[in-house]
Length: 342
Image (cartoon, rainbow, N blue to C red; front, side, top):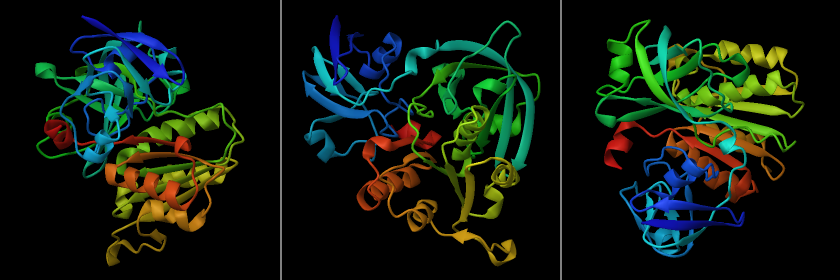
């Protein structure tokens, strides 16, 4: 059985098979619904079910609360239509520009930049090229049908190697392999490009980029792309970590601040120890933004990292700094535990 999905306010329409999620059907049809994890853990695909019936599968409470469900909200990655449906969501333009492919890749380089962060560089076959937008991610295809998603830290113009910033999660199905047994020339299969976290280039608003930990990866890709395009839009990067070592590409960011016009960099550390000799900004990284920019009405914000940071930034920027909700773009990095429990 097949159901029809109508998207408001764009008026786009696509078909959805029984047992298929609205998001999966939209991706298949090239319709740009916003999304992140695709597993009910991040809440990026949240929207309104205007009419019709849809069954929602397992998901994290933080991604969709009982109150939001009562108000007609749903998660399109988990919602499976039981009838024709009308949904309301801000559609993302440009998502269907490039084909989603399943590709083999060879491990070209493994660079351990901190005790728990590895930069994994992949090389595609000579006959293959993957087109993507800076900020998007890929999903590794693992045994038993499992998948693990990682953002590309590479900009589209320099795609000879695809770089990923991977934090070790002890006991993690994929990260234990990366930090334990993976070696150069090994073959990994992935699917991509995926995700709706990328620079909106139809705007000239100044940009705040907000990263925690390895959430820096897609932000790096966006900044590289912004610089390559010679954009004159002002960009300010706030990168937060617990300890200074967590800012594993701090030197690159400092170099950007010296060489890129219209670029500022503010590192923020939350739990520095005396031996760190840290003299810079401290506290929560999104609070540093609020201290510097009390009014964000004329800005766009791109945030990536831990869900608690992304959620706090969106809530506080909108409520206290007048940021229009539609100008907040995010990729919330869910952990393997989130995916298991979702």
